[in-house]
Length: 138
Picture (cartoon, rainbow, N blue to C red):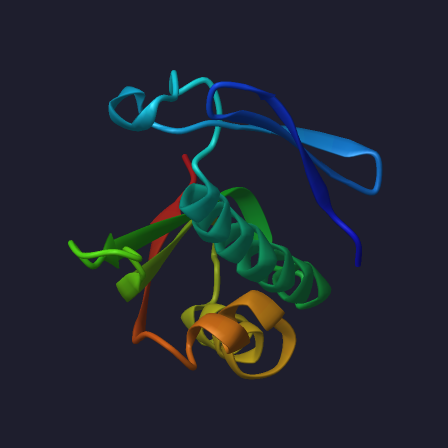
């Protein structure tokens, strides 16, 4: 995998990987204008996306009737530099019809232990707590 950032002035950068672009920036307190993701936010989004793709793929194969799905990552950071993550909570929120709790638990476990490289890397340096909610669709 190759990735790069190109400086756009002040604290703004254009991040590029495989011809896809994402804007990065910093808080005004450190010279930015909050016009893009902070780099650590991208870690959290990457983690959410990695595990979400695993879980939805597994549940679709299990023929679960998912009508809406969201993954929220709540990451606590140290107050001192380099502001590393000190605890992460991943919250999976499902909506659908007759979703099996066993299927959800198995899909989340497979993502955690086998498929999601972001979770595998981050779990080596900080605790990760997992939870889920299943809502019945109307």
